[in-house]
Image (cartoon, rainbow, N blue to C red):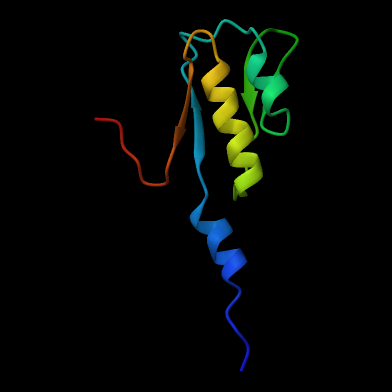
Length: 85
């Protein structure tokens, strides 16, 4: 009997989404430095987010760091199904 692929299930459960408040974002770029796989600051100063389908633990930690270092608190990390209230 084969054991289920628990690593894959864990990775899928750890899927998070990143949100940017464009009214707050001033384009400092600290998020891009912390997690360049996810955040790209365009030449126009607009932040672009490459939302991964699944966020492994290492990438999730980098994104969480990016959220923490944002000087204007423009980023949020959300669990799937999370609704603002």
